[in-house]
Length: 416
Ligand SMILES: NC(=O)c1ccc[n+]([C@@H]2O[C@H](COP(=O)([O-])OP(=O)(O)OC[C@H]3O[C@@H](n4cnc5c(N)ncnc54)[C@H](O)[C@@H]3O)[C@@H](O)[C@H]2O)c1
Image (cartoon, rainbow, N blue to C red; front, side, top):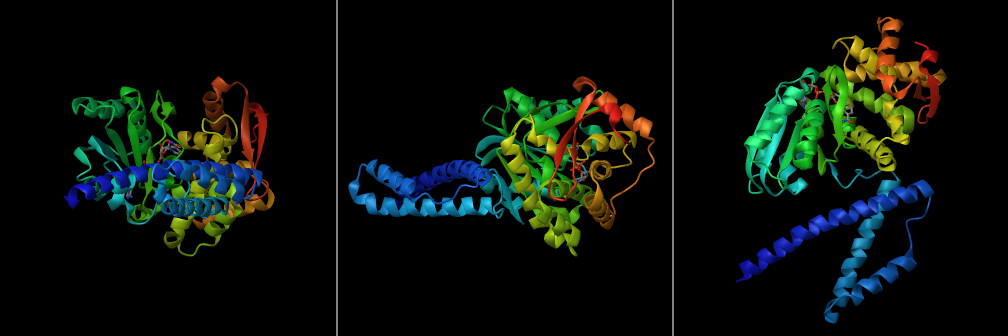
């Protein structure tokens, strides 16, 4: 008999976990607004009025002292969370979980409960990672399928996208099922786009396993495939329901890929977080500092994405180094990786001490600081990429580490 009651309590607690997440997501938005306005966290008058209103809603008045204690602890936790967000201590976004060993707890952390899940990974990701995620879904998901696509940017294309859609159609996936990406930015972008477009959008979870995807591509909701030789030209905004970042997965990542991802972290530090930049600059053991680096990057990226989710203005700061970087990456025909090219691209738009420090930190991690691609080839590529936007482009400049400015210029005035 007690078993039945315990099951009822379990079900209520599960619902409370979801409600708690929703509440904290709203608290986070309030904290971001308070941070922007410099407003205080405390508002005793509002808290007391809220407590009185909530207690008045109780049907059983004898529960009031307990319920008011419960609400007081919810308020305290919410204020702690606001404080952590404002001081930059919190893992950002209620939909992001950062922690070592979290891969094996993916099912529980995501709260997934559905009939079917498609785990998309690629042939370069150690097979134990998708298998660990699959094992964590036992008892939560009726049937799991692992779809392994070939590794590499060249496979972020319409054929492979079609293969993933075929898996979903063949498996009879419905709107209440989900797609889970386990891999780097290629897997995340392609699987995310499949989830965004299948049945006009089904739930998507992202478990990034490269540094680049952990600090950057897994959050923000951009999904895409390459088409007609143009990168990311077909895609959609589709927010993952949850992103799980497990820094332990970086232990198998080749060093060049690790440093490639670090270039995006350097970009974020240079434009908006001088402490993050200093941390990377002074680190003597990157893997032991990596969790803090990732946390600061996620904080920074989410604060930008929350302020400008569809890239109408501020979000363009994340493109620091990308205008020329994309051209370098494309002209190098796969020789120069994305982050490496972004690092090179940054050097065109910073000056003085900022330039010296960016160049030094890139060199410290073996990232290139010069290349031999002729300027006219880069110009042609940039002009073609920006054709649709007209002759002018907005570039991001860094004159001092931790701050930036936008500048609108004519493409012809670019100095390469
Ligand atoms: N959506 C966005 O906002 C956004 C932002 C930046 C970049 N991107 C995209 O991200 C992509 C690049 O992502 P990437 O740098 O992660 O490259 P990637 O996904 O190609 O991964 C790099 C390599 O590492 C392997 N790998 C992945 N995890 C591993 C692990 N833990 N151990 C060992 N090997 C591992 C992969 O198999 C691959 O061979 C590009 O397509 C770019 O357009 C998207």
